[in-house]
Amino acid sequence: MYKKPRGCWNSEGNGRTSKKGRCASPAKPAIERHSRRLAAAAQRRFLVDCLTMVLAYHVILSAYGFWLPNDQRGSWSAFVRAYELAAFGPATKTNTRRSVASRRFDPAQRAAMQAALARQPVVFDGLQARAIATGFADYIARSKVPVHACAIMPDHVHLVVGRFRLSIERTCEQLKGAATAQMNREDRHPFADQPYRDDRLPTPWARKGWWVYLNSAAHVTRSIRYVNENPVRAGLRPQRWSFVTPYERCEEGTLRVTR
Image (cartoon, rainbow, N blue to C red; front, side):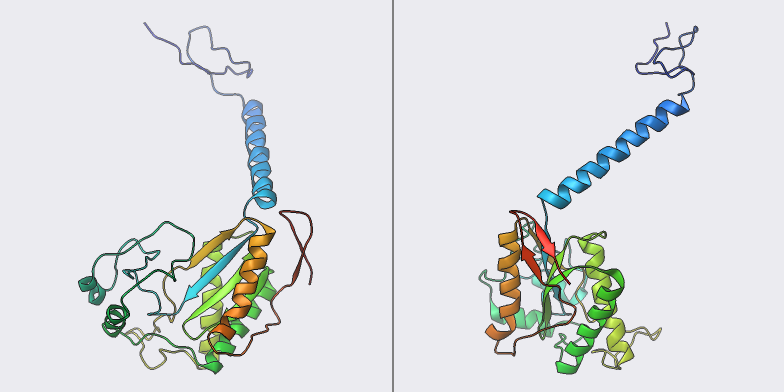
């Protein structure tokens, strides 16, 4: 005996089946109403996320060779891509979004791993750092992504990035792409003399990036202070960039952006 499925609509959209017990075609008006409800619910969830959850991200973009996939402290890599690094063990993927830089590690093993790389680890000089900043400024001006702090170090970059219409993964990739493009325009690419066979240049960046979710104004303030003090702690001059957007703390859990 045929058993009619539950939840079928007839051509009138009233939830009943046809006389033969089989489902009629779903009513278009009912589907459209249901789609509108789903879209409105998704928009409400997005707004709630924007207002009550992640306010910003503390982003770390590593230069090539700075943080390796099988680093003893952990990494964001699921496996080791480079053949020369496989001898040092599998990837040490960690799911924490907190910094692991303070964990203990063997400096001698890290130096041996970096020496085994196909190319020398990238260390940006002052002119390359300026080119990176110019690339960032160009992308930020075009995209309007809010950046509340930036420190360009010799082998990595710290940023505090506010919520944006793009995912933080996509934002990181576009920031790195803009910086690399500017270094190319200024003829300051770290691997300018080491092209591939098709004349493309290896990326000066590590894959992906590392970011910490900042869920309160206090967390954002603390991360901005950490990023701004990072060059000074490393013995470098303080950095001030024109593309950095200051902010004021308003009500708890919110930020008022000012340009």
